[in-house]
Length: 342
Image (cartoon, rainbow, N blue to C red; front, side, top):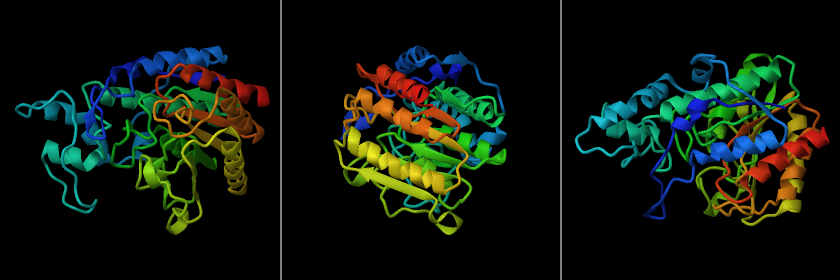
């Protein structure tokens, strides 16, 4: 299986993370790259750098206003007297129709949903090349030469909306890849298996019937992202019925998860999907520090095999999965399970 990664993705090194009123090290650490890269190679992946497809495919998903913000906010922020080293919001608009301020502080509040997406000097460059990696993976599939590909997208993307960062995410790599595939005449579905709901992905395609979005995740009633990911969210307008959320109780294990995955894959077939983008979060692991679900190493192998059983071309785009003793093994087992099930 071909795999895509760019060395410039190392340059995002977030230091700030606040949860429950406590500041601690950010879980989305660059060392995830080292672990995931080695694990993909152990599964037989052959890495190559991405091509630069330019900003157009990114702007097909994200607003120009937001892209300008991401590229320019850090140097603007550093000109504020007494500003910290990272862009972190401290005020938010009451709704998205409120005025758009000229202030760097105000724009940070508008474009950053929470304190888990600090922007530092290397963030824009890393996010740009993370997105380009996803685009190259999509092109490998669309060109017809690859049955599957793995994209080591880091920073991840599925919490990023069209004009808002959140939850460690800045550019929505899975959405960018899916839109690229749709623009090339395919009918993609995004299946998000991260422990957290893919709220940004849902928001981007919520009124669209060109991309099916599905998410299997820990129930957001008491789990991030809280405000999105509930079963009644089905899409709107032309997108009504093209969004499926399958929230699971905290601590759900392999068998119940795989039964839910079967339901998701039935919807994938009903949509007439001809290419599957898997937003591959590994934080559903029983060993992940977020402790949302309880998938074992064998469970990840079964998830990979279920993807293979669809018979569809599959683009795996890395989302969450944080440092633990089994992070790398879980990726290896997923990709090996896919290969052996193909």
